[in-house]
Length: 495
Image (cartoon, rainbow, N blue to C red; front, side):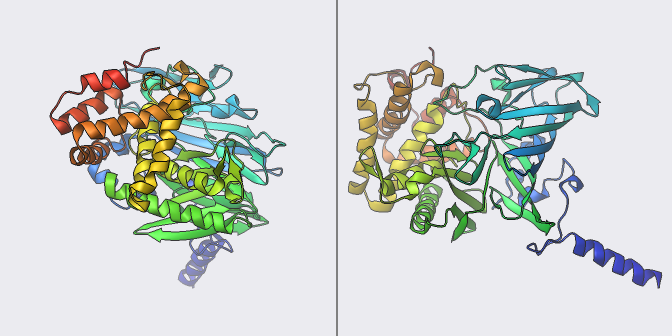
């Protein structure tokens, strides 16, 4: 009799953990240890840990989001496990608070380190939170933070924002957590608005989102479970290795999917964007095929595409990209360029960032050319691979046109973002930069250069590269010196 009762009790527990939409038992985020990497292996096509055992020492984020009503008010609980991988002792750790550089806000209510409450210091317009450690952290040792904070999202009347906000029925959460930058970036200057904002190592994210049931979640990674009760829904997903995190929510999302190999590509867009959503899907699939053949396999079993009211044309995140919603109106044109053309080039560009930025990292504030120039060049390769050489000339001419905006001034492509004016940044990093990559290809020869790019992405996968390492890798591939070429195009990175 007792055994029967125990079995019934276990059944009730299992059933209680299943929501109306979820077919799997829902396991709370708190049930996972900070050293449990099994959820991430469900996302990865190959066992990345076998080839990169150092991944076990990377930072782990456990994030619990409680989406309020109104949805612009969000409460978050964060557990962050950080290992000192440097050769020196650490006494305080900085967290970058991106939302405080927007009209929104990230407000920390409590912070503890290994169970001890600490009083952090806010600097740089509240965008950097310095957390003192009760005890100096020796090399190879780890520390765990618990942070409670609230997010307040800006609302805009014109339907456009910079990735963090609420407009047009879309909740967009870019860089929505206290993030620990790469060690080399702990003392970086504030990012400028016309460049990228972060410089991170790869980390791992287990994320639990509780939201009103009518919202549809667009997220990267693999879903581990979902449940529904009392008008709310909870979703747990895993993402990593990943340099940052993005998620979006809307009642209006319609999901289209297409598969390439072991990867499911998911497009989230409004109800009236069916043709554009399909176009985005086909572009992403073709780009994954092109870049996978050229640079090495895409690592994840999912890729998410999201249409949001976004001020720029697009923005990249590991495993997920966002496109401006206005591009999904295929009848429009912008600057004389039809929306379908811009939607395709933007999607291909952001997909290319899955290799140059998401997989092979770089300092996006001080050496942005290393991902942006390569990504622009890769986008040109996408057009060559999909449509042929003659059809790709239009995109190549657009690179020339960008450089022409500054009268083809031979400004070095290797400078920090803040060393350029906004006009120069687009013209030099996005225009002259990929033309330098093309000049490299001609100098090395197509076969040697293609082999170099493939080996480069393999060697520096999940790592961070700088200009000197890029040049050294190219020189090793060609068994030649490239000093003159790099001096003429890249410069010394100063100014």
